[in-house]
Image (cartoon, rainbow, N blue to C red; front, side):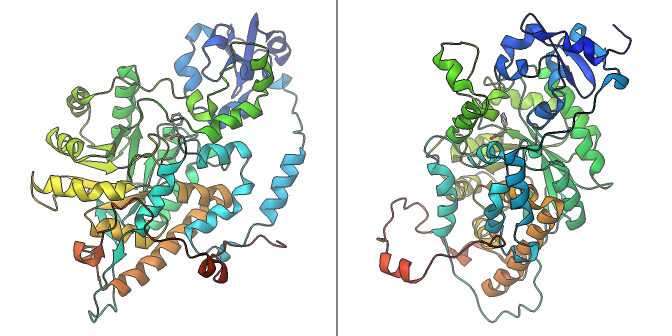
Length: 497
Ligand code: PPY
């Protein structure tokens, strides 16, 4: 069918026997796809015969329909003359969120990256559940933060710190901070401009953004929003269909992406129960499941529902293939042990990220910071150190410049921050991300002066005491009297709160 399709025709296909939907003004016949939809058929049937764009957009990679639906199921374009503009009903939840948006703390009262989490309630419950959740008992996500607090500084004095410089070079790209934006998926759940908030802020501040495979904005939209020569990295989930991966990687290289970060810690997605429960509530799947309906995958959540393309068979044998299809730097993201760090080095990779995926994969996995110690020691036995051809990055739990400086002192080249920037744009858009960069800059200036390091090269192992890093038990009993007398630090306040 090549002529334009009236919406009334689409509306005739509104049930399980014949189900058409509209996404981005195109009509698709998804009848045969209903039972294959990783998120279950119920959610599609809700939009049968209607425009599903608004629900589809934030949680699907831009090409999901094109990649998954055979071409003969692409029915055609909707006739724009027949589209009745629906005035979106303003729900109580919309009103609640708008009131919270209006009452957000002014940006200049946001003093640290934790503060961006205070306005978390401006997010939809679904977005907050997806972003904040971690796997199982969420032990690792907490440990990621706690680990930084088990490393203590050994500052040097009297070093003339009038001028301090915290800029650096990450994989051959200049960076105004020793920090890059780590990949986090589904940015439009948090803000209508999604990942573009990061791209634009990064351009203005000389920061490198790692583009996620599962961004809400398309890869090209993100690259188009970047300035000429703005350095970008790409995070890669490897598809079961290697041709798709090859095309994607080579396209990224053609568009100037500088490094490929292959995610290696997610052969299966962790069980993030907050996210899973949210799906359960949102789609009313609970009742159906009790009725014994099989097609509702109630235990999935947003993330699991769209992760089925990821290839669990990925192995060391694939690394030479990646080398054969791209000249970009290859970095393995999600390394935790010296054994694997050495294998990555010997496989010819240009670096590794010591990451546990923000605590979202194997719960009770150690923190990247703790792993850094053994991994640096192992790499030192294999080649020069620091090694100009092999970089070690860390992510997980980073909220302060002091965290970054600890990782650098212990051997990291730079550090990734994911959630910190994600929350910044979710509550304040691009300006929020810019504020986050400014805050970090202020913190670097102060911390480097107080540490006695005039540049990043001067941030050395002797400046930290990491002897307690591997002590996982709480050795000091909580001093409750002290803690109640000295109230905990507060976050930025909502107006009228
Ligand atoms: C994550 O949620 O941890 C991700 O890395 C992104 C993602 C999102 C959806 C499916 C698979 C991975």
